[in-house]
Length: 182
Image (cartoon, rainbow, N blue to C red):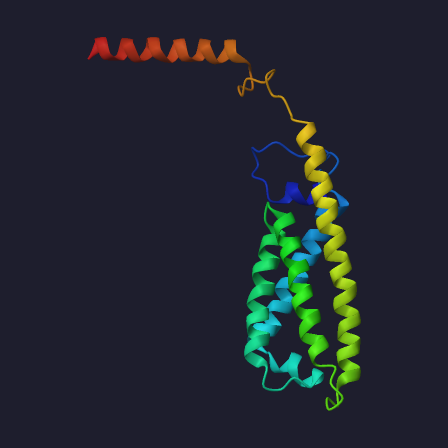
């Protein structure tokens, strides 16, 4: 993939010869996938709630589905943010709400209760993924706390501190010379 990065660079920019290992873990990729899934589902629930309510026999509950769509969108955005763990835990809580809502639709008078059963299975599987991802991120976070990165050996100057001081002295002396000449 690094060769694609060279296409968008200007002529004077350094070329990328190879890229190093990714710092993203399997759990980070799972959180990202669940975040995008949540955004897509939330958009459907928000803008086309009847596509959700009709197959489940939940006509008249479009407002509730729209509210769930907003919840899905916010959870998805959080799952894509820096604080993925909060996003995944909010997804777990939302899955619980979805399960309770679906269970209330398993009535004998609902002609679509077979669809509700399938939806419960799907939500249960996704809830399991959300829970496992949130747990993995929690474990990752506690492991990272023990390994703090130390940057005490870095100066922030690519050519070193002495080169930066020399450049600063040179600029200062030129500036003073320009002031005395005028």
